[in-house]
Amino acid sequence: VRLAVFASGTGTNFKALQAAIASRRFNAKIVRLIVDKENTGASHLAEQFGIPITVIRYADFANKVDAEIHIIQQLQADQVDGILLAGYMRILTTTLLDAFPQKIINIHPAWLPHFPGRHGIQDAFDAHVQETGVTIHYVDSGVDTGTIVAQQKVPRYSTDTLETLEQRIHQVEHTLYPDTLEKLLDEGVFLK
Ligand code: GRF
Image (cartoon, rainbow, N blue to C red):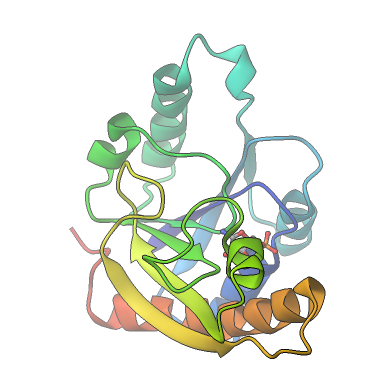
């Protein structure tokens, strides 16, 4: 199974996925990293792993659909079967979604449907919930609205700062995403 990872940030989830694929011998390979800006942590990791990188500068395209057509051409050339979003801070349009129907997965750092959007950790922290979580879901054209694949609860302690809560959530992400990928591969979801 040939996978692409999309990331905009530090890339710790990308790193956890790649580490699991390598050490646990999943029947999968990350063949392309897509980033939407230069010099991300994720791109530096891809260089270390020897994974080809494509930088999509959305501002260079007339619109988002044109940018996505460019992405689709690259992924088709790479013969990609599935896409894992790992901190990709953009909403996909139906152009990309329809090119990979039910083959695009995202991780969100909250217990969806609670706290969707960019600030899922902060919003849960500010709401003083006793529990938040991590969610893995299929991607649709909404903001963190696709069908849920896996979830894990994360406690929020009264002594937490935003930073300690963030750390606890990220730790859970780094096991839940690889474990869920393994399950999806076992179920054959990326096969045609
Ligand atoms: C993660 O918290 C992920 O859930 C969210 O963006 C963050 C990306 O972190 N969608 P990293 O780049 O994988 O370190």
